[in-house]
Length: 188
Image (cartoon, rainbow, N blue to C red; front, side, top):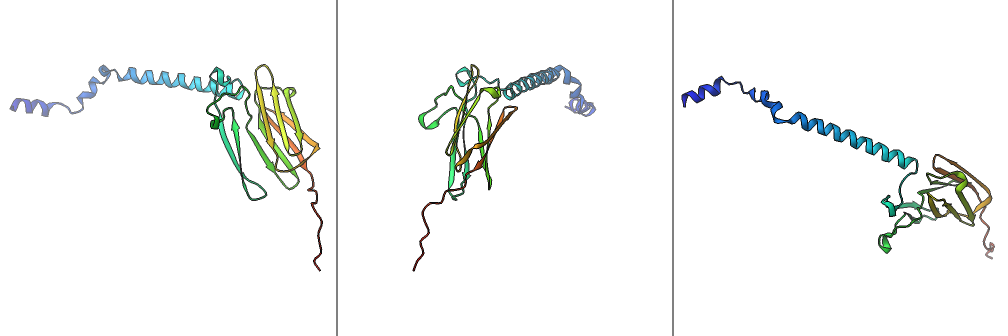
């Protein structure tokens, strides 16, 4: 026993580091580096294709999108708006037509609508406004978008100005002055 204690005392406690390369850790770290590099290349490709509008349809394994936005209207009441290419209330149902993400901003004298419709030419975008609803429609071989946007008020259809750049559609309207309803009655 005395001999064993002497051997332990004489041995450097950090000698196990000398055996490190034989454990194969350098191979593991090289494999991690390679996997991370491939994953980064894949993610960069996916993001680039998404930004270019080259996403497959849900039937082809493309993204399923569902969401809702919340806004308090001028009447002080909350308004929820759903968007996406599935409707959870009816179960998951793929829709061949994508619903663009839309934001509506109301100011004192105008209403602005911003919609994301990537992967199309501006000539393919069809817009129609009636009273307080803007309809956005795109129907091409590669992309189909459709959305009826409820506007917060009636707008002047003749004032409409639309621009499209980098997959983002901006439509701006002047508000119509509210029509007076009824007549004031003097109390005697």
